[in-house]
Image 1 (cartoon, protein in one colour):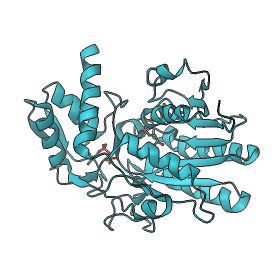
Image 2: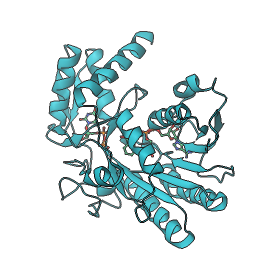
Image 3: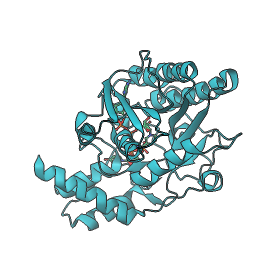
Length: 318
Ligand code: NAD
Ligand code: UDP
């Protein structure tokens, strides 16, 4: 029995990252309350956790207030894939802004520590490369990605103001592109799209000419980083903290790697580049290394092979 068991709220806990986080927290012996409105998440991702007596699920939209007695809050609720966050941009903004106000209000009321899943998108289409936390970013305030980027930027502001004004104990991490098992087949982000297309021998859809870069982090590394950061006790350091893998590659290189690894007959086709698509992205993770002694350990080859195995399994069951 774990006598120091904490009661932990995970918003967005039925999503890709949230489901891994709930699982890891339960493994550590915590009590976990997963709150999710199932917009992009699903009960399938957490069905293996229902048998655990330390796990509870509440279907709730965090744009509405919620009262629970908890020790810690991980605020992950928000659609993260461009196609999903652009489908209902007003709701995306409400989730980031009203959701943050509701969760920060709860943290203040019950004196809980609170983590915010921010994003590399706060850097927009960056002019500084790689991106360090001190860079303020280049973000279009009125474009199709703004509902997500500006919503997340506003959430960061709210977190730091609740910290300064109300002394709420916060942690703000800027998560860079993360992939792995438990992503939806129709997630729409690049790794899952390319793997599903390759496994089905369909055309691989590169947006633009494929010269844009990203740096991909495997999910288990990211979850370790999040938990490590939440448990860190650096008095004057609450973030923002970059979490991601700094190995950068072009989207064309990613497509070629996935075709090769899956032994696929797929052909690459080129489609229009979406508006404001960032041209380059690579985290500088030296602050995470220094402050929480964290570094990713799973390289792209290994991470892709786990992810390909996961998608092969679910495609065979469909
Ligand atoms: P996801 O879409 O799989 O998960 C988001 C979850 O939040 C889903 O389960 C969804 O149903 C839920 N949700 C959305 N709106 C909600 C609301 N109003 N109330 C309650 N639940 C709501 O995405 P993900 O990749 O797991 O991302 C999780 C968090 O991490 C997001 O906040 C995202 O912005 C952040 N993030 C993720 C990445 C990444 O690469 N995966 C990168 C940067 C930031
Ligand atoms: N992308 C692509 N084909 C796809 C999906 C995405 O070429 O089927 C590109 C997209 O335009 C972007 C990169 O891959 O340049 C990463 O996209 P994703 O949506 O995964 O995340 P982002 O980093 O843009 O939020």
